Image 1 (cartoon, rainbow, N blue to C red):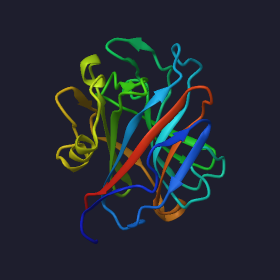
Image 2: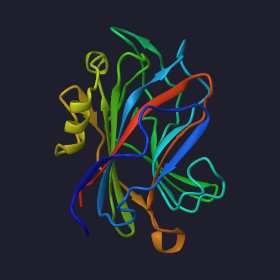
Image 3: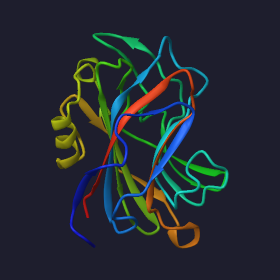
Length: 225
């Protein structure tokens, strides 16, 4: 294994509207534990986003088929499985990273195997373009089980604090995954993955299916080991 590495992805200030991005980290499949961090905000959120909107991010095999394709070879990460409740506090925010509703998953072809997340309920994210939030996903390789853990803002006070460049880097560097006292981390969850049969996980992806409500974000990814 090469040395630990923290870097921005190829994109900054990327905006998704019914789209998916798939990017290759420079370490490809040479990792034992990685952390993917997204910093940004949803926009045009005038009401609760209903109808089970799909947002997903994590790692996949190759650059051709990510979460949004029925031809996916091997995809692992977090996906939403619930409506995003809109709350008006100091800022407008939503709850896309609720551990009790969202799922860790492995997707092979069109088949999705969801795994329930315990802990980490009420993961909030900004729906105000002037304030940027953070969500982090940490993945540890194993055989047959990978382990996944996620963190996001847990209070209306925390989600209203803009995540600056310095703070974004701090969240990516710190141990453990939990970002701050105002964030909450899920439990570490086992997810069965077969890289030998279905392909090595050497790219990462971010997927958002809606058009009216857009997701704007920056990416950082950290190879821990």
